[in-house]
Length: 378
Image 1 (cartoon, rainbow, N blue to C red):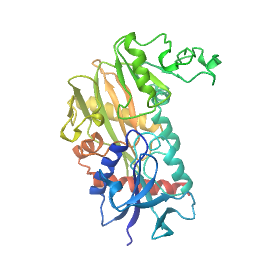
Image 2 (spheres, rainbow, N blue to C red):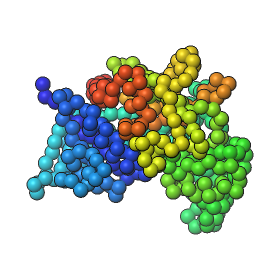
Image 3 (tube, rainbow, N blue to C red):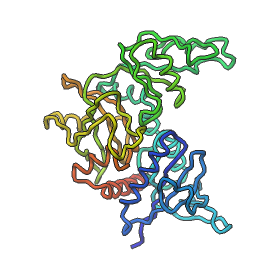
Image 4 (cartoon, rainbow, N blue to C red):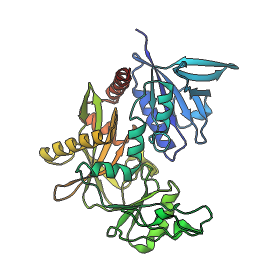
């Protein structure tokens, strides 16, 4: 039987480029060569697509050549330039091991929908919904699942000349009023904030890039400027007092499987392992307990809540659902990662491994689900 040809995309233009390369390196170690023939396509920080031998820290310095996913359904795979000529290669499944913008926000999913190639992970709509934390909060809250108290800031809500204020600068629901002048980032006026401390973060980013913990009004504008480096939509939310927990969700044999729950204990600050200097050696401020040190009844409730959130947001294939557990036992959504990290220190594979499911088995399930979903479309 012929091996399935799998195109593994990694890298990308987002701030999570390095994390993606690490994730793809682990996938390359674990993908079963007796079942699959992988082809690795790295995307550089400036957006060039290059086929390479394998993902690694210096993959661009190896023997690379231009190769892209063709949107032409007649190709159903890669178009590349090699030995001075254009060639094509049929691909059975694409595994977009891409984190952050253009990887988890629906952009690459749009290209893959055009190509007609089955792909692993969430579709366009669910990717975009989960990427925008404010939209995910609103959708989940509508189902009765609790979320942190939050507000939204649109610092770019001003006319091109900056001299007048459009109607959408008027406070409406969770939308903050904005002082529409030359330096919108530093002149935002905020009312009705959750009680300090609060977290200021890009609404559409990941791995804690651009996130600041703000303790008073004096720290607010600087935090907004930091967030604006990553997104033009800012989320301000309450600092939830409670335990951070996570659920690794996987579609397997048409059912949702949840790995063992992890529990994060912080010594100080907030969880931002992907921005640390040596995460492979352990986090600078966080320790993990897997399975979580919680009563079985509460673990079961967290798992069912994670599944409900997964379904509400229309996720597909896999996701990591992060939540807060307050001392009173109440559960709140933190965020949903539609393509969680697969690095050697990532939470998703650790939770699955604790449940007896290896990365290789996860890959098998993801490929099987992607092919099944495509069959169901026909």
